[in-house]
Length: 140
Image (cartoon, rainbow, N blue to C red; front, top):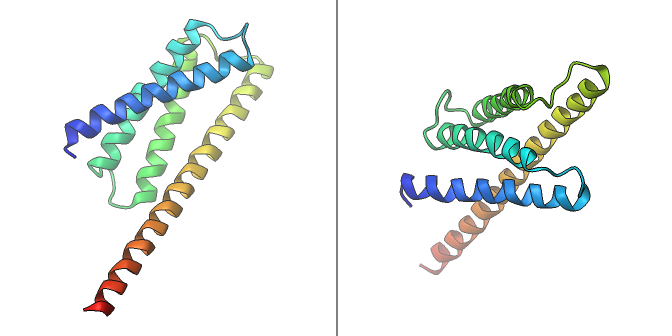
C-alpha cells in the first residue's frame, strides 16, 4: 500500500475514532455532548494523527521506536493543552486543573497500553510467520 493510500485510510480511521468517541460520550452524558465537543475532538485528532502518522511512517526524529512513541505522546499532550485553552475547556481553578491532570494521566496510560498491545500482536504475528517458515524448511 502506497503512502497516499495509507494516509487516506488512516485519516478516515482517525475521523471514525473521533465520531465513535463522541457517540459513546453522547450516550453516557446526553446533556453534555455538544457539537463544540466534537469540534474539539476533531481538532485534536487530525493534527495528532497526522503527526503520529508522519513520525512513524517516515521514522522522523529517531530510529528508535520508543523515542518516536514518546515524542508522539508528548506532542499529543501539548496539543491537548493548547486546544483545551483555545476551546475554553481549561480553566485555571483547582477543580478543573485536577480533572485535566487526571485526563492527562489517563491519556498516557491508554497510549502506553495501546503500544503494549501493538507490540504483543506484532510479536505473535512474527512468531506465527517464523513457525510457518520453520515448518516449510523441514519439509524441504
